[in-house]
Length: 330
Image (cartoon, rainbow, N blue to C red; front, side, top):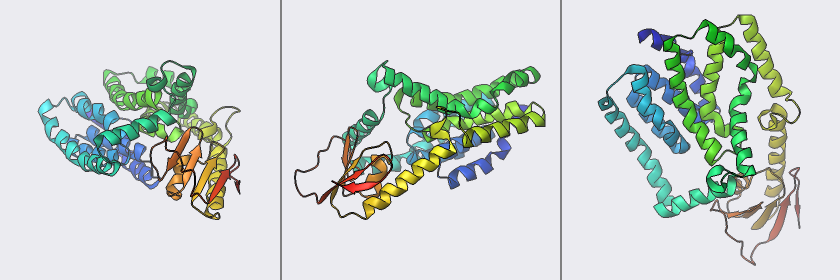
């Protein structure tokens, strides 16, 4: 087992990835990577504490990485279940303040659940809320697509890598990564996923598979894979990878900046109608919490749940944001 611990997919280099993820405010990736790293090292209490802290910023992490915390130590280290009592207690103590604060600010446990359910229902078109419909199928396909788009540059290396390295210990490592990958992926596919960044918890595991596959072939092929990855990001194929490409990120950033600056120049209190996909009503309501925001089937005020209706009078103006982010008053 010691040789297995020393040969996992470059886990010794993961602290650098953790720092990079935190600097980018990608709590999903940072929390998932750090939790998996400490579990692999046998530092279960630290893993539980990190998961509890990360779960405060991204609550879905606690639920989706709990199987990794409970089963990962047994899979890698063959430890007794008694060694998990303390980590579970630490996780509970760490996550409780976050939950209590959320419940109190929401006005009670029942209200917090209603807010969460309403937000998911209004922003997700998934199997959980719609059943096996066309839109739910599209969302599940997006979950698969966004998790797998990074693998376009190295999937072809998997057969050659398996031919050179398919020992029983290697399959144990794959099982560890599966425990990491499957729960977050299922959450995206079945419950909600609307943006590529929401798949970062599971995508980190696929990156390790790619690192393993490329490390088993010649460096020249690895350089080619890196070139393909950069090319797909900067110059995405037509109708493919739009939301995960550099041109689209620049476009959305420009639209959001233009819209927020335009709204800031208009007087409040306002009814702000968003005609396009961006900026999202959440972003606008964050910067202008006292205004009423309308987008698609969502009407919100001060970051409250959807389904609120603005008052018939008292609003100073009706501000419209069009598809390009330009702002005008109706």
